[in-house]
Image 1 (tube, helix red, strand yellow):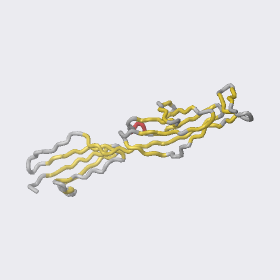
Image 2 (tube, rainbow, N blue to C red):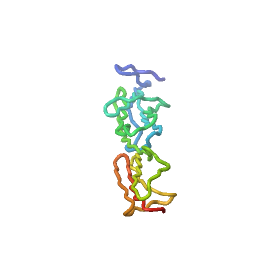
Image 3 (cartoon, one colour):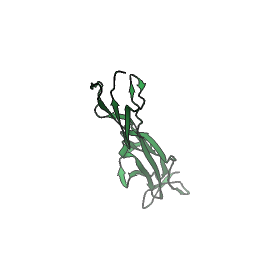
Image 4 (cartoon, rainbow, N blue to C red):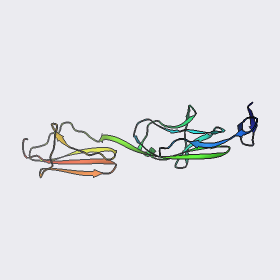
Length: 180
């Protein structure tokens, strides 16, 4: 015969001989996760215990929103952004204890070309021109210039300058000597 024991904190599962209490336990084991920017991301926290634990998520000491699905608590990030990277901690607590699990999320961002893109430029013969290509991404993208599908080789007439950090910027300076 099953009964319930009333404690000062919560109802516990009991039978004629004893009350069963189990401190929370979180099943997750992954501690480092890399996700792609602008992709929906779910952070699962599967916690068990008797009585059923309460689960919360924190990032930088602040509670974040939750969704409950099939007794597994998820932190749902609609579209992961670079600023969302960092440590997330799942806390599970019940009347007899607590458990926590921290996962470190880092992000990758596919290359995105920013700025003014010129499909056609007309420059005077014998002059100089500078073509600018700004690309952002994480890790910083590599930029390769091409003309008519053939990679441009750097020479005394062609210089390429870079600025690599979170975004890549490449300036291609051409000295136009004649038709090629």
